[in-house]
Amino acid sequence: MRKTGRSVTAEFVRWLLLGALLLGGSGCAWLDQKQRQLIYRPTPLPAATDDLPASAQAFFLDVPSSVQPSRIALWWLAHPDRQAPTLLYLHGTYRHLVGNRPKIEALSRAGFSVLAVDYRGWGHSSALVPSEQSIVQDAQQAWAELQRREPRPGMRVLYGHSMGSGVAVALASQLSSPADYGALILESAFTSFADIGAEAGFWAGLAARWTTERFASIDQMAQIRAPLLMLHGAQDRTVPIALGQRLFAAANPPKHWQPFASASHSDLHRAEASAYQSALITFRQRYLTQDEYSSLFHSTRRLP
Image 1 (spheres, rainbow, N blue to C red):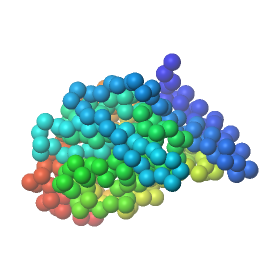
Image 2: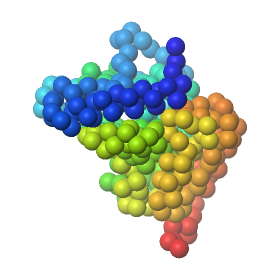
Image 3: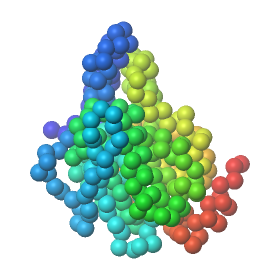
């Protein structure tokens, strides 16, 4: 049975509280691994599973490792329009690329070529109990591949959903726009793991501050100066919309906030499909049209 946003959050908080308190008292490596397993819920796929979108290409990239050879699995969905911008898709916890296929296809329909990655521990990527460090490393490897496939810096887009928003922000904070990339899109984004815990109550918030896994996007937003689109469901019980609003308030302009009244955490592309497509297309046409990108960006990036 698929768990609701409320039950997933409750389970996350319950195990986070137990793991963080034990970990804080002992520093045990086993408990650290267990904590990461429960937070990220990586989901591998059997080798035979193959549920690619139409015309998509699946491939692997090696990830540098001093421990053992490892690799990440990626999908490449080239848009029929060769002038389309290219988006790096960074997913959240639990769902692998196959589970995220409908959202990936929705982004493609909105006019993007899409490079989507499964971090180690998910899908067909190498087995691993992930950490913030390993996830960001995998995203950097995928980013290098996106640069190879998309030579136009201003037409590169970073996109992150849920935990993936933290990955996208971490990556964007290390880059410059428009020299390296053209825009950032965040869906169901949060300020930090600690704040997700705090939203669930005092004890959960206290426990979350003991964890080694942070994804503190709120501390990195000021470093990012690129056109930003943030999408959030008003019915989201996994990441309350208030956290997305706080992150948006911390961002530099130009920025655009698009709430979805009837959507929850992962169903924006389905619950309000027309509005979802419209928000993405409008943003793409405004900031990611090759001939007009530079003048539009520089005319709107002035700080108040």
